[in-house]
Image (spheres, rainbow, N blue to C red):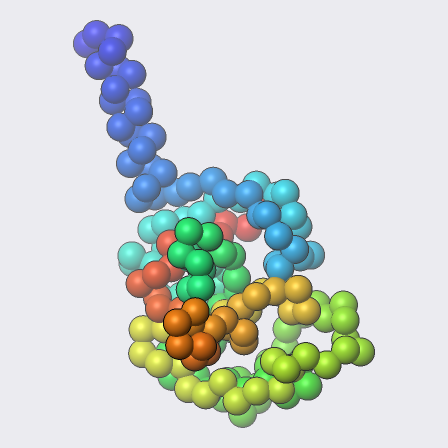
Length: 167
């Protein structure tokens, strides 16, 4: 085999792995801190949801529902069929307060409009996602459709690119 053929095979193999199997990313914002600090390099398992479904607690990546050119990393809080409410910054999942040792509220004394909300039942084929650094995360609580102004509360599972592999 000639050198150019080996190089071409290597490039094609790398492109296949990056597009279908795994991809490296860098965390660019503090929305998942301290779980995933700014600047940390991670890998995304792109096969995870081709053979399974997202589960509560998974950290996933997907295009922003309000700016598809921007990739986001958030934690799955609720899956299809779950009923979600937020009461005084606490998640109530299916009527039970959710234990979230990873959640940070560094502005706990401040009140935001999304600190209390009836999210409702997660539709089929969707998930409800939040950043771990709740007071610094744009997520399912506050996304709005640019044209209609309607809230975008859920991410479609088919939009999820993959599951973050924790270091």
